[in-house]
Structure formats: structure tokens, C-alpha cells
Image (tube, rainbow, N blue to C red; front, side, top):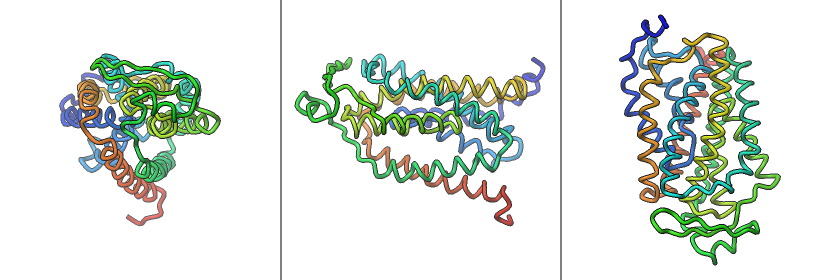
Length: 307
């Protein structure tokens, strides 16, 4: 354990409040926190100085996903207490998401030395997701009554009684071939790049299946936590196998993990108090900025810019 004594344990102190903010945003929007953590590690840290730079892109993605596991676990507890999670609606998505996410995580292990390629892929993903999220029209009240639920797809009518007394009725979500393909792609990208599954689950639940937003957000968190836990375990195991225990920046996660645990509790408490559409526009704008910045870095590393 000598490597632990050599670490600068105060270096990343500022990531504690940052992690709280990231986790709160992730809980409110249903996206994966790794979508924001990885750019912080890969774009902001190098600006702060060489001593802040992590071992590589794979290490940054693995650390982001590892942190996200704790944040979504905390959020899961918050939503579970509010009795908003509908577990049976999550199972069809998990059947597809789990194995595909593990495959993506295994591929990351084989590509961990392809720094520019991974950054280029991440940039492309952000630029693709940005307009999709921006154009998505959320339906905040959808599914709140039996009449509205009858308009949705599927056959089985389900009922969720929240802890605050609110009743949500909607038809059990169906994934279908198109939905299964979408879930598979998002899960694969989550395993490979740390982001994707949360961004494809929420639109399917809310827009396609007319699940009320509070239930959709809570159920999405459950799907994401199970998926990223499988992907994170695979990624971290591969990193440690390749570089030993010091492949994980423990002096960083000692701040990010407590931060996301707290943020994971704040998010569910704010659910419904912030417009879902406002959150979507904010996330879409952030993704566009991240995509452009990451793309520039990737092209520079590929030697296409003489800077």
C-alpha cells in the first residue's frame, strides 16, 4: 500500500462540490454523471496543470463510471424512498443493457492506448446526442390519470402510488425492436465511453411509452445504476489488471464519491421543481460544447492541427 502514501490527497479537493453539482444534475435529467465527469477529467484537468492529468482516456472514463455508480446508488435510494421506481418496467431494458454494456467495457480495455481515437469517438457521441436531447419534447404530466394512460402503447395498465400520495397510472412500457436497438447502442457506448444508456432510456420511457416524468426519471436511474455497475466493474478490473491498483486515482475518487453520494440525495428532492425542458436544453448545450472541445483535442492529437 506504499503507493497510497505517495499520493497528494489534497490535490483534487475542489472536486467535492463539483461532484455534488454533477450528481444533482444527473438525477434531475436522467443522464449519466460520467457524461460530465469524463470531460472534466480530460479537458479541464490538463488546463489546471500537468499534475492533475490522469493516466489516460481509459482511466478517465473508468474513474468517471466508477464515481457514477455511487452517485446513482445514492439517487436510487432517494427515489426508492419516494416510491417512484417501477421495477417491472425496467426489466426489459436491463435484459438488453447489461450484456451489451459489458461488451463495450471489454472493448475499452483493448483500446485504452488509442487516446486520440477514444477522444474522437467521445466527441462524436456528444455532438450526436446534443441535438437529439435538444429536440426532445418532454411530457411532464403524461400518464398521471387513467384516461391519459389509455393513450399510451402497451396493454397492461400499471399503477404507482408515490410516497407523497400522488397516483400515477400508465401502460407498462414496451421496448420493441427499435427500442431494443436503441438501448443496445446506448449501453454499448456506456461500457465503451461511459455515457449513453441514461440518454436513450428517458426518451423511450417518457416520449415513446408515455410514462410520467417522475416515474420515468426514477426508473431510468435504476436501469442506469445496474448497467453502469456492470460496466464499471469490468472497466476497473481491466485497468487494475493492466496497471495495478495505482491505475485508479484514489486521491481523486476520495472526493468525487462522497460528493456524488450527497448530490444523489439532493436530485430526487428537487424533482419536479425544475422544468424538465430547461434541464434538457442545458444538457444539450453542455454536450455540444463538450463535443466541440473534445473534437478539437482529438484532431490536435492526430496531428491535424499544427498547435
